[in-house]
Length: 255
Image (tube, rainbow, N blue to C red; front, side, top):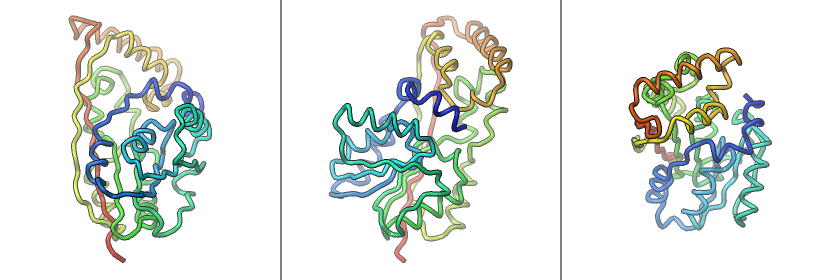
């Protein structure tokens, strides 16, 4: 998977969608918080890190990721737009060295399926201050099945076995202790784009799931995908569907 992210790092911000909804939700929760120290775990090329720093003027953010190419892309893009309130850390979640009780917030966007979730949960609990907030933005297998890829791209659901069910995540939060699950917010998104854009996204590995296909499997599935879209949608330049994600909002309990 590290090779996949190195390969797509310079395209990642363009090939992935970045939705403002979860960041607006975080902004509203933290309204009036003033100076905030936080970490974005699995930050990738910094798509959501940049939005957080834009919306939260008092935030200083540690951007942590297991892939150095992604962090290099984040640093380049942040320097280009003169973002200064950040530092980067190259580490897997299992190896993150975060001081206990040092952070106001922990964020993770579309990344927890790459983590050992119980380890991530323990890391989040330990590094948060009492009363600190955790925000986990992700999709479930059920949500994945309703995407344009889950519905029409052969093998996509069978290859993508890393996503966590909502009940699994809730159970792990309960078992680790010290965290209160405040809310689970749902974010539905109407999508529309042309078939050429969808094919471009797939060829450029819009999701890391595509890297799990062999070259022949991917080529065959892409052909069937295109044929299926042309059969099911009368206007190939305006293919419409819904995506959905959830945000789990947690709070560190007093020690």
